[in-house]
Length: 355
Image (cartoon, rainbow, N blue to C red; front, side):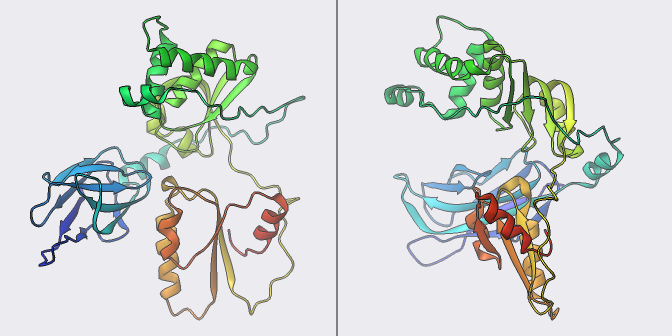
């Protein structure tokens, strides 16, 4: 099934074109990884349609009429669609693109048929010390950035190639970055290096730099699926679904896969006292406000529940931050933001009835 996303400009007598999304309806459910998006511009216009979202972004030529969004993973996809001219000035008001990538019947069946593996319930070592490597400025000259069109991912791709096969002919800025990385990670020699899945070339670069400085093991933590291909010693996921996802199996060479389910310290996070039955039922969410969390489905359910004549009072509270948070301000949800003080977080969670 291919879902066609159509962006059309309404026919208007105004000089300024207006961009409207006619298909899909807001929150449309898509069960394919490749989505065909079509668009049209009414009247003469030689600029671009600019998509600005955490997962859907880029400039599309107004003279074209379609593009494929390929390899979409499960989650909520939001993007602002804005007409811009050749000088990158905004033309007219933006439109909103929103669709939900969900499991197909075949994908759901495959997950149900998977045999569960052993879970790592508790992890303890006799002695441990955590070292968080702080951000360090790499000092790449701005002239090199401009001359070579460098982006973070492009630079990390070059660093990965250099780490796999060092060469004196490599660009001088790559040799400079390599030294900065190896110096920064030198204290990790003999340790276990753990890093979260960034879905870009930073991960294979980290793995290779770690091996170069002599880490005991490299561990990829699956904060999301769809990793960049590389080799690690172990993969850790929060669920069977993540740890053994097809995108992980295709991309990652690992000796071991572990499932460590998110846990709750029941000694600390105990419920508050008996709730006053006359008050609203508080339903909360704690986590990142990002595409892979599929929060668009939850937000739509909240909107439907609030519109229903149930006679029950509800309050919805989300604790966390992320790239998509602004898209959810239109819903009847209290967006609390991140809470980084443990005492305040415990107090907040104790006020909830459902999480």
